[in-house]
Image (cartoon, rainbow, N blue to C red):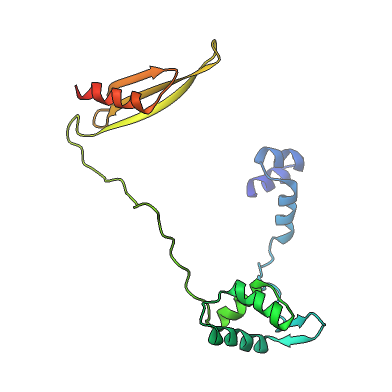
Length: 190
């Protein structure tokens, strides 16, 4: 932004300078307009403190909090904010959304902690190994390429030694399957 201002002050066209620097005109003018003004965040619109019923009557948030407490005390089932939103709409005729119910339940400390996701498989982390010599750790890699004259793809499966990055064995064909990987590994072991 400062570089653009220097060039513009030297008399170069604003559009040209902004194009070279890579700044959109709208961004440049918005920043120029807000320079010197402190950025103020007002936190959004304040909460009104009530919700409306379907017949147009206002209901205070304190009353809604009492109804939420009743649902959680009377029912033995664990109700989340979404289900309580549905109950408030159905039983009390409120025009309320789930975000407001979430906010009210958070204020009253009524939200249950989120459950942790259960993995269907054990998480395996790669072990960091210190390799001191050749043939201690091999890696297998598959690359594909395109043959322009034949309009076909080919595959290169290679078995690489991690220590010195040398190729131990490879398979290069128009197809690559699991049996080819096992053949490359068997040839390398022999």
